[in-house]
Length: 248
Length: 239
Image (cartoon, rainbow over all chains, first blue to last red; front, side, top):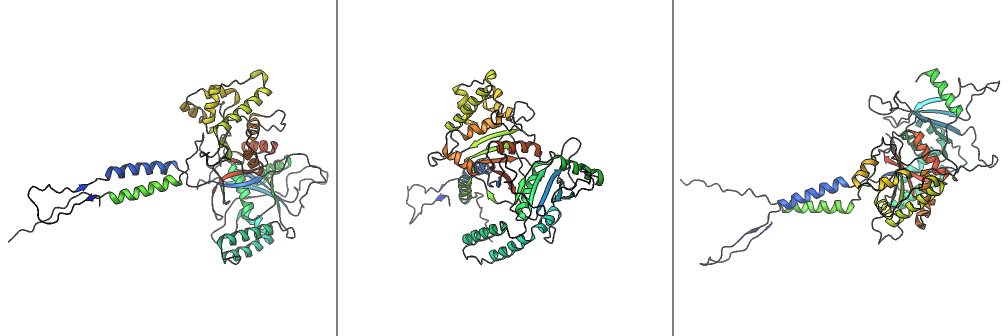
């Protein structure tokens, strides 16, 4: 291929110059290209990072009456925590994964006894972990709880998803996607359905991954109303009492 | 009987085809590549199912190392000629530095930071910055390799932008001074994007304790920059 052959027609004449076959060796060229490819491969980022958009509430003082209080029946408070060793490093299980715990309670914390004293034992605090779906696609851990709380929304979205898969909204992919997204958003924000309000809190020990994990569960379970809040004394007291009672 | 002659074959391999392939690959990588931003620490972001993509340019990156040190970078488009609205240009970074130092000196008249024009030029070329104001003049007068060495040493006290849970904007902490300086650096597009919530990205390591990331979130809230994005890696729902 890399040679230019000159045809020698006819008989060789005496004194005619010897026909040369010009052959270019491409090996060094390939070497150089390979080096350049290696350089570009190592220096590029092919994957763009994903983002979670988040809007925090303003910390301006809001009048008590103006506040849109969540109904107790709808509220769930999640407190994420990460198990740590004595030296502050994150505890890992056999597979090398960090164990992120979630404490949660429904509605208000039940800690006040008849004498108006705070008693953290026997509160309505429960503990579970972050777990994905099991092999059969069933929810586990905190996801199961959130899933069951947001069932009306999830059922409607499952129907929409099926329609979206069958391209019932539009045969065009882009249009199909956008109609599905718009419909799903409508369902998520449909105030006629019973939807939970999730308050996410984190202990100072909690790793960033566990907080993101909690925000992620909101996306997975199609929960539209959630907020990040600061942990308070009651929460800390309840967690301490829970650990005293049930062990780590 | 005549001997069977075995033709000697030449061992030359024709490399032309190989060369063609490598050039094609090379072209592909050259066209698709966006270079990695140099960052003081490698941060492994936690995974999430969110599929929103983040733009790598026109964004203020707040980087939180596992140790809780905070770094800032203002990333813009390299090709300014075609993107007049871009906001990562060197004059802009100089403006940010000027604003921030002026504000700091106004707040701390007893220990003023004095920077020369050369220092500002050096600053304009740095991607991620993260040293306290007091350490800024010495840091900017180091050579580039020494700067990299200093800024990647997480055990040093003079690395990372000091941050605390200050909520009073009359006495802002250094992180707040920087963010205000970036916001009021005179670029309308930057302001608009920051208001929309597309201009700020918080990137923290998955093992960073929440208490340190919390400072950053709280400070942004105090600065009324309530909308921003959190950088994550991709995972699927079943994980």
